Image (cartoon, rainbow over all chains, first blue to last red; front, side, top):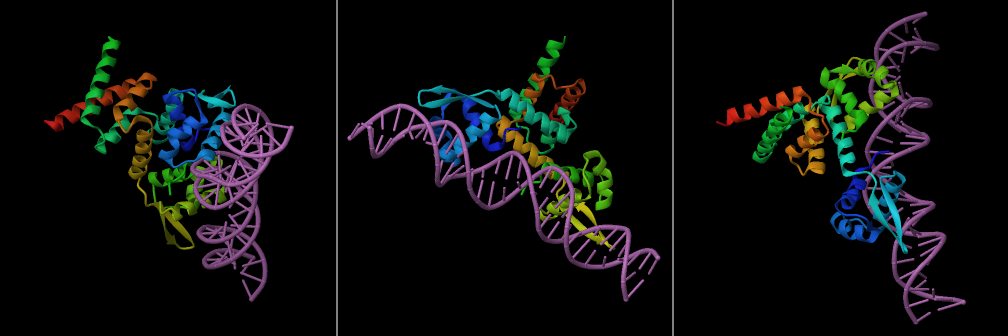
Amino acid sequence: MAVSEAEAIIMDVLWRSSPRSAEDILAEVGPQQGWQEGTVKSLLNRLLKKKAVKAERDGRRYLYAPRLTREQYVSQESKGLLDRLFGGRVAPLVAHFSEQRKLSKKDIAELKKLLQELDDEQS
Amino acid sequence: MAVSEAEAIIMDVLWRSSPRSAEDILAEVGPQQGWQEGTVKSLLNRLLKKKAVKAERDGRRYLYAPRLTREQYVSQESKGLLDRLFGGRVAPLVAHFSEQRKLSKKDIAELKKLLQELDDEQS
DNA sequence: AATTAATGTTTACATGCGTAATCGATAACC
DNA sequence: GGTTATCGATTACGCATGTAAACATTAATT
């Protein structure tokens, strides 16, 4: 089953640094999201059930760590969107952002560099 | 409220051509999705409630048409993903697909052309 | 006019999600 | 050793979603 949006916020914390205790996660995400203890614990349990995180006992508590990598998650999500909205092709997606003026100078520079690199490794 | 995934499939039919009757929509999407009448009708009603489509009476029945444009929908969805996963920047997204070898030759060619055009209109 | 067919409207029902309160077990403290 | 604090596990609850059946209305047919 898929990792939901609220769950992904917990994953983000774990991707930044793990393993971490529930308390620790709450401290980082609670104030920011307005979540309290029970919420974080439920989300952690659902993530465990989905096998997206693992838990290792540490005395009285658990330390949680990702089992699903950020790369895997990002891939699933982006591929889903790409397939659903752009026929699975990247160029139309970029064209879309271009039309929406969502390409910053920096983006453009980086894209050029990226394409250049692809050329280089090609030859 | 957001248009759900099943609802988006109905929208797709309407974006391809509209206005259309429920029967018509069912004919196109039913066999393919394994949906039956009631399902399509429910989805249409939810879309009406969300004001994503409008309905115009045509004799005994209604003809449905999009109110939300495909552009609007695509924008919302892609911006959501971009913000959540790539800090709102396009280049990292493309880099991600590049790393996943998801850039076809055609993609690369089109991206080059796109960047070229951006340069041109710039100068 | 009564019955049937065609459509839209309302209701249903299981599952997932966001958000949490409550329960239960175990460790710490008096 | 009994009480309290700390954690995780279980349960809850409203709302959205996917999927559809049941109901209502109105037009067509006999």
